[in-house]
Image (cartoon, rainbow, N blue to C red; front, top):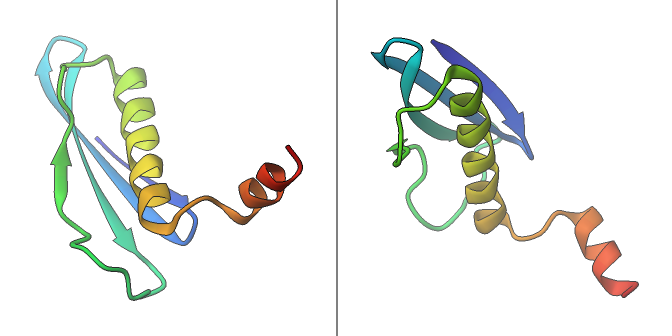
Length: 87
């Protein structure tokens, strides 16, 4: 099973593979769809640990992990920067 999620100009590609009845192993890959120049290697396929997961959890965990990786690469979103200044 496959799903693609857009986030902050990147694409998070999630792939599930059946490992047992109703349980899946999860891999995701981050692709830059705007060809930005970012330090570090992007585009590597990453397998999630501590699985297998149900289908619903697998997609959720991969999406959150991908978003966290993108946030590490880009820093906080602009909206987050504005909120941080008001505290």
